[in-house]
Image 1 (cartoon, rainbow, N blue to C red):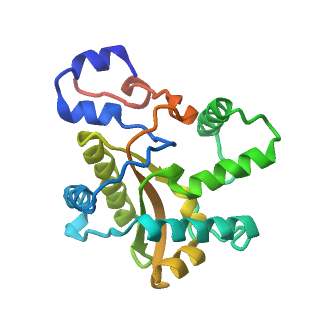
Image 2: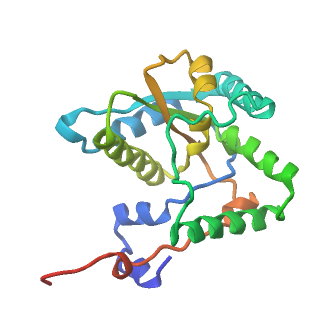
Length: 234
């Protein structure tokens, strides 16, 4: 985090929540109450959306329901049942620069913390399985959208997801938005009895960070506004 930003935002609760948000990849088993999750989603639903369409749909899982769901998706991964079954693509192929280098950097920084070397396929697969178990979080969300909706509603959805993350930080909770669940659309719909009209946007873990988890030592670097903004008329 930029020291200048930290100084400017001291005492600002909103900015502090934004700046302290990280993708946490290891959680304590401490439960999160249904009422808390419902409150976070109510707050997040104040996100702006074109003509107030509110395109988000959420399935919130905990306890045995979460365990069954994770086991089912992990089983589909282990069997290869849904290889190359993406309904939407997160990245272009090939991924151009500078985005390819940024993606590689976070990947190898994370794998370094986890002790996974290049070519260690078994360890990589084990990490994906932890991902499919929400990294041990007590709450897992599956977020879906009606496939008839277009890019505007997906943009709206992004603001809703960010609101969940920030509202969670304001209550001392952590999150991780997880695109991996979109790789198993048929399995997710079958396990949760969702209609074919739904596309899986992502999953999200919610819980309390496990400070002993090596992955949680990861800190990402962000480009400052000066590098991506053309200021005019100031």
